Image (cartoon, rainbow, N blue to C red; front, side):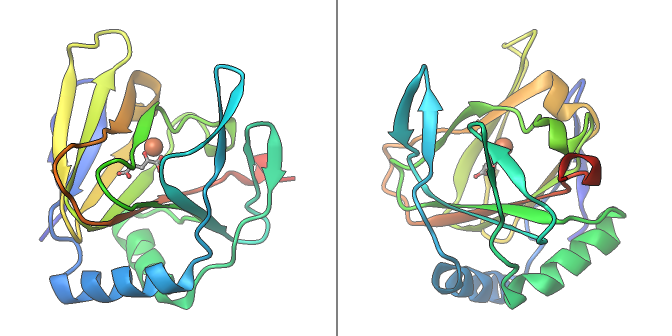
Length: 199
Ligand SMILES: O=C(O)CCC(=O)C(=O)O
Ligand SMILES: [Fe+2]
């Protein structure tokens, strides 16, 4: 299916509910579960350290280091299974990616809180390509200045959501917890860390 624009004022979004065919998405999910060194990241919230409610893994080119809670981290190397995905994204979106944040939500209690992907190293108008595998979860975008302006979207197995332009400047997003019994989900957000920020 093609990527189609999702209309939302002050945002630039495109969505394909089935960017990967089910069999490809199944294989990728199974591989990534095994291939990645999943860890619980520590996050700083109101001055206190907590375990983040999910498993994560940062992947990237060797020069694409990133800052997280004030520390600089070297990324994990790309697992070969992601190479075709990375190439296809670059071709279809017309922009290259040098890093991926992989998140693994073990069940409905795992989640991601409100944030924007607005780190300085991504630049002011980052293209972020979010590929979802496994259980369908609800993703919510909320306008910073007008919180009633919202988009709620279900992200199914094999779907691709692209956030671009000024989306990160105007909107925050989250993956809320759910009381529904849900299976595991893996999400990959492909990003481009700018070279000026990686030295
Ligand atoms: O799991 C998701 O769909 C969202 C992930 C996300 O917002 C992020 O990695 O920055
Ligand atoms: Fe995000």
